[in-house]
Length: 111
Length: 206
Image 1 (cartoon, rainbow over the protein chains, first blue to last red):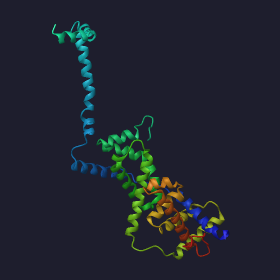
Image 2 (cartoon, rainbow over the protein chains, first blue to last red):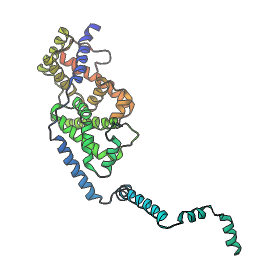
Image 3 (cartoon, rainbow over the protein chains, first blue to last red):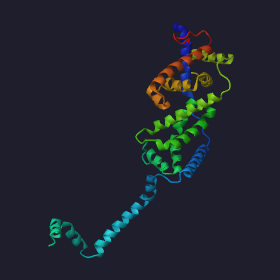
Image 4 (cartoon, rainbow over the protein chains, first blue to last red):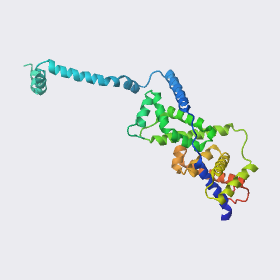
């Protein structure tokens, strides 16, 4: 019985080996170009159907490129205010360290 | 998720594509062309491989919006490639005009050649390998699209039931049953090709 079963087992074994021997296809040089052409068409169709992109995409496209410029402008403005107005930093320090509780009680009592 | 030193990560490229820069897709294609080609070449005939690879990359592009960063990207690509091959066979069988149930004298001769070659040497030469691949394709062509996919993945490639279920999008129970039946069907086809001399295992006669 076992002897009779052997040929089919061998055949099956050889087919498993053959399966792994199959070679990947050699793709023509233009194939990537063809895929990209189809993808661009799909993208164009998608934009025609839905011309308004998602809000997060709008945020990334519109806000992020200007964020660095805005940060640079803020730094320049701060440096300018420190250098152009004499005594500005002392006023700012005094403002920050002032006893605000006293100020509040003065405002409330009207004194 | 690949993170090559000095190269943009897959996730960064995916984000770029999602934001509308379709040209970035070409770098994903370059990176995974070999992986997709290797999968497709094992499942579809060489004359159709190029078309299926093309189709697979289009599907990848269309599905990129659903990809989640925490999943391994290569595995996600494999799933799309396997399902493209499965769809190829479903369409192929649907359009096929005549059933391929009969075993011709040529098929029988081929099977005998393989077996006689096997007994002579353990490793076949190039011509023998070509014969084996033809025999494999001939035998698989007599199975249904479902059976040939599940058999290829479980028996030939050695994927587990759970992995195969994930690749095909089936339940594990379905994969188990299908794989068992497909292997039985393949052995029956091979037995018919080789002749009646082969005695099947109990339960394989059906």
